[in-house]
Image 1 (cartoon, rainbow, N blue to C red):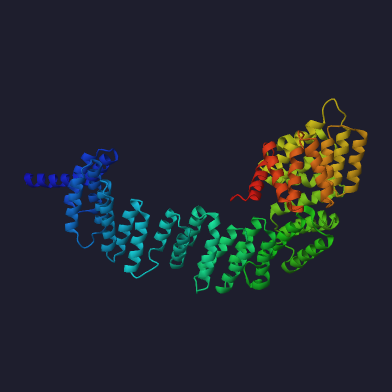
Image 2: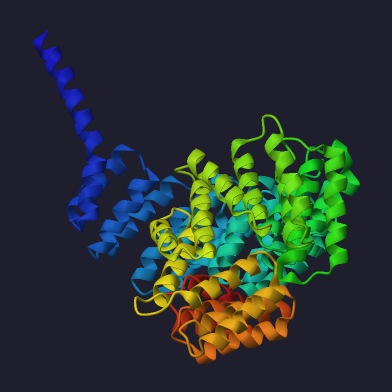
Length: 599
């Protein structure tokens, strides 16, 4: 009995040790102890009756030790045992010969491997992978092509061929193979797009479009159209992208989802005209049966508002038309808690573009009184209503509304905005010390725009309200800024001239020029605005308004004058000479876009 137990224990131990041998062999191999590793791999090879992995490792160890004669013997023995599928073994034989410098005989073995491969998908892949490991991509391609012919399936290895053509830099065939793989396996679309994004040079996208158009002539799968739309998006050709997406929407009888998503993307990229067309397609073609109807209508109005009012390039007739569209939409959708954000937008247009604060106040008050409206929407309406009261000159009502929002949303961005508005109100009233204290606290606001504005205001007050100067110039200037806020542009301009007459060569001179530029901008006299901004940059390059003026001058040249070269020059000057400016990052980005960098 004891003898039987011993034999069982010995057999178990032997099995355990054998199981550990591959790990031990691999350990030796990684450490460069090829003789020890080879001995174990040879034992494993014999006990496994010719396992391919152990054979490869054994031969690698022999070659590392320079024992090519034994390596050849080992592969020849394996070839005798495996006459049906010799392809991979022939590649191994060729590798041994090539390592000895016999390149011609090695080529013969590689060619024979391709010639002898059987119609077995696993064997074909293994053979091609063996060539790829040797970085013999041409032979790998031939292996896959021969395999596809044997299996009578031209598409089966399309993705593998695409990978190999990519490594070779043969972009035409790379594109062809990857597109074939997408047509065969639609689920590969996103993966192939990612590969094109990473590896396909920009100048090759025309070839990609050409091949996609060729495939569209056939009854191509929808993924080919999707790919073509994706290419147009990379080129920021949203109009062409929309053509493809609308065609897909019609072909699949969808509810406008793809068109809506593309419109949102265009909106995010500030391609407002393209976004509007996408949204209007859903509204006009899909109609109210689409789940996206109301949001599309809402977003279309948002885009129209931004497109029209950005840069103040609009006519009062266009503003009236836009307001009528808002009114029509609200008549259909109702004035309720769901449409309250649109009502805020409409009030904003009434106040600052139609210059009718009373109409805006009526809309905002209506929002505040709508039952169950989101608290943050109500708070936003209160902030806007506070602005309207301020425009109307009712400082008490303004500060009351700002303080209500501050109290309710103490730790929220809305609370920070309310505190900024109260500080700004104190500044307008001439209470500079209190305003500066509040701006100082807001320097650490979580909202970067609020923090930046607070820093600017704090520095501005500090620079222009020294202990040895009278506060009167600052009062005149803050009054002028208040008038600009109230859209009293002529009165503001006169106030600034009065300041210059009373206090010539004051530290506020650059600020006066800058504010005059802002006034002319709001008046839509962009030439005069540009002259004032340029004067700030040229005459006061070290003062705090210089970077602001430089950025606005660049924006006017880009968006108003359509002088991209001048705009590029100004953006570059900004991020180089004013690298600490809050505009530096955005200026660098716009410079790179104008230079044509792929971002």
